[in-house]
Each structure stands twice: as structure tokens, then as C-alpha cells.
Length: 194
Image 1 (cartoon, rainbow, N blue to C red):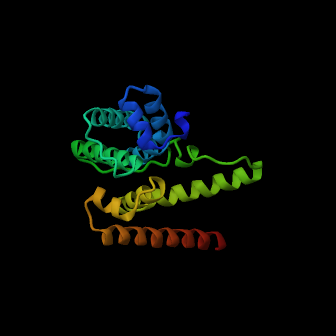
Image 2: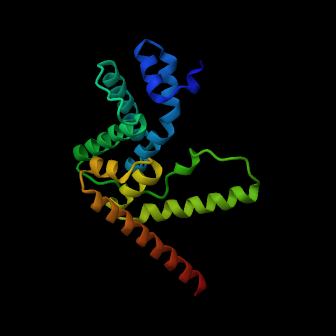
Image 3: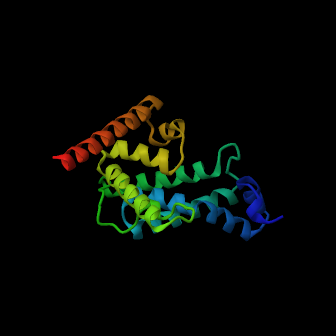
């Protein structure tokens, strides 16, 4: 059976038996989401690459020591590791993330898309750019929840555990993020009509 058809748990078991291709498949399957979530927090390509490598070193070490718990999903576990390493970095630097709109990386560059015509591509690109700008303008706590929920596919329970806040706080931050984004869109539309 091809490693591409195996689930994450099966790939991990194969890797632990010495099959390096199984780990390569696991990495390939999840690298875009993990790297993107790191980048959205740190806003620096080189730093994101460094943290990304640290994440997979930590994953490999944990797997080899037999400390990985199969009950959870691999991606959520890996996202938790990447989030914790980002937080550790900021604690060491004693600064919060600053969003830079001049960066060339875009979350939507790594998302898969079906073939479409040039007009559809341009419209989608404009929408993605607008959404990214709106997310970038959110307060840090709200931006964090949006990134973890919509780009990392984490549940609110997982977000609350990861960020060490209650589920209600995580839900509230998402609610305020959506309200703020809606207001920004209305303000933008109002300015266009003026």
C-alpha cells in the first residue's frame, strides 16, 4: 500500500519502524498549514523557517521517545507545538507580534485551488488580500483566534487550551473579531460611496 493512502497514525507507526518515507509523507501533508500558522504569528520568513524546523525536531524527538499520544489528531498536536514555540520566542524577545503589510508571503498562496479562469483568479486574489488586510488590523488576541480557528482548523476547545483562556473567552474574541471585521468592511464601503 502506498504511504499516501495511509492516515497519520499509520504513517507514524511506519516511521517508528524505520520507514523514513512515512515521515516525509506526514511532513508533506501538513507542512503548509504548520509553516503558515507560524509565519502569521512571527511575520518573518527566516524566523518562521527556524521555528518550523524546531517544531519538527521536537516532533521527531517526541515520536522516537514514544511519548506521542494517538488519541489526538497529529495536525492539532503539531500546531500546539508550533504555537508554544512561537510564544516562547516572543517571551524571550519580550515583544508582541507586529503585522507588516509589506511582506510578500500570503496565507492564500499555500491553499490549494482548482483551475479557474483569469477573471476568477483575480477576483479571488482580491478577496483574499482584503480578508488578510482585515485580519492583520485586528487586535492581537482576536487575530490569534482567527488564525488558529480558520487557518489552523482548530476547535475552540483546542484554542482555549492552547492560549490558556476559557472557551467562552476564545469564543468572545472570535465574535469581536468578526464584529470588527464587519465594521471595517462597512467603513470601507462607506468611504467608497462618499
